[in-house]
Image 1 (cartoon, rainbow, N blue to C red):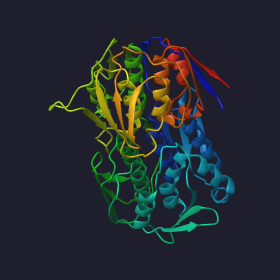
Image 2: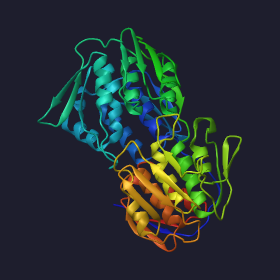
Image 3: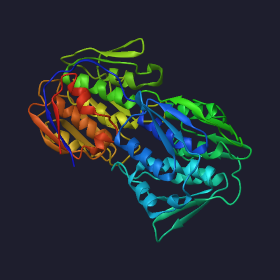
Image 4: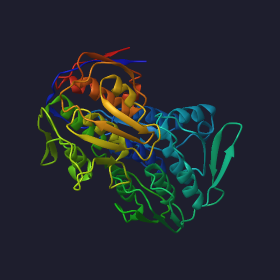
Length: 438
């Protein structure tokens, strides 16, 4: 396992460009399984989860061609898939270790009619049920069987999938994506109400339409899909990662740095910039860039009636839960107090004990809520030895360490590598002091 040594107290300066969006990449790469023609995807983030997903697809029989001029561009040709490998123990075990492999469910049930699937791995952030995926695909005519001996699910269709109306029990992003991918070649019309409408889903729908699908209602929670017989090849560019954008805003704020984040696709950030502004962060839109102004102090807003500010996650266009860890860390040095309410995952706030050890004033009310009492930059966090429990907590701990007094160590940084490409080199180029040790 690798670790980071972080010498805190260094200000950043310059500009940085966010990588392609991880969550979009997982979806659109898996969607290439729906056609036997080549699909070229640009701006692919070369992070651990994506690299492992691409390798797994190669093992499945997908031909992946690298662009010699751009390592972030790849062409996927799923003309032939290996049916024996897809039923092998190796495929089963690799899927169990890779959370993103859940996105195989929709494409494989549509393309080959069945898929054996293990409970996926990933972040240790609490229960992440797959009911929405299975129920939605079953509504199209697939059968779900649980293999108790292998502790695995078997989704199988015995005839063509047929479109139908469905009301999702939750606006699951990955659940919505899987149902869309299963439905685009189903017979008839599928209507999905309470669909997730995050930019990742919008991008997936746009790519599928470019491949010949007929999806309307994009960017709303009511999608209509007219099934087509086949899909063809296409070309697609992945959006900048909004989670990296938010992470860089947090780094600039905590270290008192002047930083420009380039080409952020501002219109697809939703209320993320406003969430940081409510913590007192001075950031400005300059074209499609964000310029974060260096601040020695920043003050948390109150609600209009004077009550303590609450920042909570919500389905899009609400605030993404993946940035609450970063917002929580930023609040530790603000003037004022804020309640962070993580509604979706019951274990995602458990990393705050490491921040408390660094000197942060945080009250963990329950698994979903934490009150942060800001230091107003009057008391610097102190270095600590920590372990990263998940991607977003890992980057939050890195931000805390960059602002702390002394040298911190973060172990298990493969969790950070799963979501952030070459992060230490990119930050060191801005003035950070981060060393990777094996």
